Image (cartoon, rainbow, N blue to C red; front, side):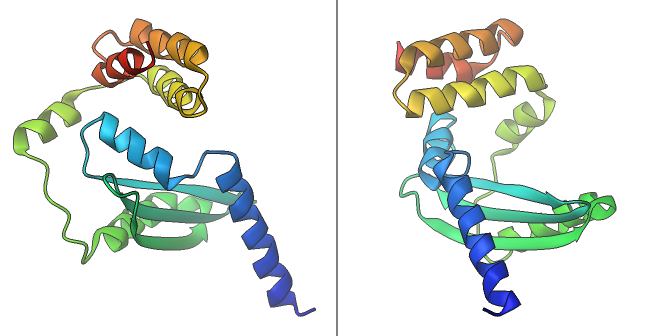
Length: 161
């Protein structure tokens, strides 16, 4: 078997494994987007091959779960910031996404949600998607304890209650 075929098979298996874990899923992204009132979600992931980074991004239509566009980038870890800004430009180029209203943009930029609250919120969404409402309630509540103004977590808690 050729080396390229082995690499392609390994990449395919790795991508299927990521999808199977629930971490990379267009339907989950669409649910998150609906919850926060978005029309589109940009989602993705990264793989670190001992300092050689690969980023994968996609734009998902929240209403249909359709993947509108995908982009991949690969570079060294020390160039991560440039890689992120470049791939962000590439994935949005030519898609004609609507701009956020200025007031919504200002609110989002000025809001500082602690990382710990976002982590609990994200985990709560996964448990809610898998039907474990009790665990989702617990995690949404913990996110709200950390950041009382976390409107998305409050809305998630109402949906699983």
